[in-house]
Amino acid sequence: MERKIIKTGDGSVTIHLSEWDEQYHSKHGAIQEARHVFIKMGLEYWVGLNKEKNPAILEIGFGTGLNAFITFLEAQKLQLKIDYTGVEAYPVSTSEIKALNYAEMLSAENQIETFQRMHEIPWNNKVDISENFQLEKQQKRFEEIEDINKYNLVFFDAFGARVQPELWTEDIFARMFAGMKSNSVLVTYSAKGSVRRAMQTAGFIVERLPGPPGKREMLRALKK
Image (cartoon, rainbow, N blue to C red):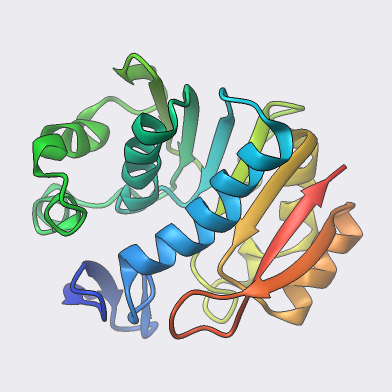
């Protein structure tokens, strides 16, 4: 499948899959989407809800590492200690990683080595990226996730249901529900009715929220 680096609406880049007409992040702004969906509506909301400082986070679709990198930067600001797990079946190539401009666009040039290290660490090993950020990248398919009562927060960032509907099923969200602790939160850029219903059937309380630039709505699911 042809893959190419494209610039998005906020100046940050993403990877475009021509055959699917799909990209890893919103074409309206990769960084804007990540900040809105996963940080504002996810991480910041969970911290406010639980008043805790040590969340365990699961990312579904590690991809370019953008969400993990922004979360790392936010952890420094908010004085959080984060245990981060990113699941990815098909890792991004080294040449693609080198073409990503996230450190520059986030005014975090002093952390470019951190971003590169996130991609260089071995798969399926937990590594201390800093004293307050642990990262484990797991190379496997989402349907192979079998964690129980482990995560406080889930960033659900799989490719869209239009091209990979099998990633947005009741079975997948039941696996998410089982892996999450009480009073945990799942956020995703998707707002499809079929996705919301699959979440609800799995046991989540689901709410529609304003979406990032270029998207009217998104979903947030709570496990009470």
